[in-house]
Length: 166
Image 1 (tube, one colour):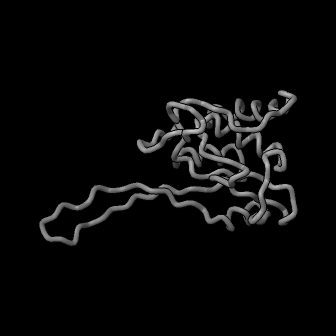
Image 2: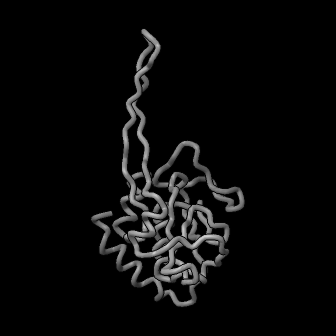
Image 3: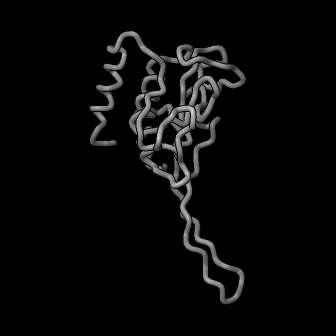
């Protein structure tokens, strides 16, 4: 999951920065073995991410996908498809944060929480029952219908340009 955050950082600065941490824990019980090291992720605070992008968090409003910044939404939706993640929703504000120049601006979508993505393949991950998918390794495009496929040209071009980095 950490590497997914790093991938998305390559695509856009409108993303959460992540840091990989290793926890070493010692047992306090004499004679008991120390606990194996654990790894975790520290995520940038929401407010810090917004400030870094000269924006504010837009909260307390319900949006439909078509009410968000189209370029940022398409970047996010194609990325979610690329990594095999269906665990997100604009309408339900599931694993998405919204940024804007102010609280009335058309929001920018910023995804997070990628543990249910097929690329991560967490042992507990499973697709939502409503999607009628067998595995998180299946792909399902969760973006909205765009009438003109040319709207994706810039996104696909950018992903192809970053292919080696990704």
